[in-house]
Length: 309
Image (tube, rainbow, N blue to C red; front, side, top):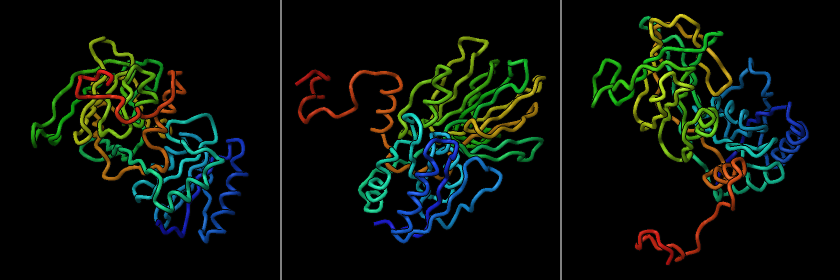
């Protein structure tokens, strides 16, 4: 059984009912002997301490979960993602069921999904200029009217200098409106809108997806999560280039910058937001027929090539 003394609440007060629900959660936690601390999601300049909490509660939508994940995941703090909007891919807990799910988590009887996060480092003139982590995606795009950006993309298990097993393999030069490097969690966000694949959130992989490439042969690629992805802003790039993390923070890039993207050494732990919740959201948002479920035992015989028994 989980021992909880302090809980951190990230609340998006722009969402209807957020204040009332936050007060309800604070009251219930207090009755359980748990000290709650509330952080206003919209006041991003004043970050709370990341350590010293046993659980984080996200009240909002998927965007609130993304922000919460970047703050607390490095400290291995699990997140209870309560959805205050439409059905979310990440925020899967309804407001009327949060207490039941919380009690199940305390008892150790609810699933906790471990999601891949990406660690980003921008190298500029031999030094690290920018560091960031993301749960959904990193997007490199134009910051001006001229949309075309010139990028060189490589991937592999070796170092930047080509050392290591196999070294970095150059995937090619991309002239496009931009490039998305996404996790499986982020595969259903900007990446899928740009023609990328939907990837099961439990898979350890990274999606490299060009946005409106000038050459139609530039297609999305899925690489293993243990590989590093390197994106270089080509020296010939004249218009401004922007690095956007999880659609929420942005940094200007310069010609010859190198963006090194690796699997983060930690995972986002999401309570009651496993594969079934993901496929339920997928079917609902894409209007797929039927409901997610399992075949009854014995109804599918894989020994006969997938024919019905």
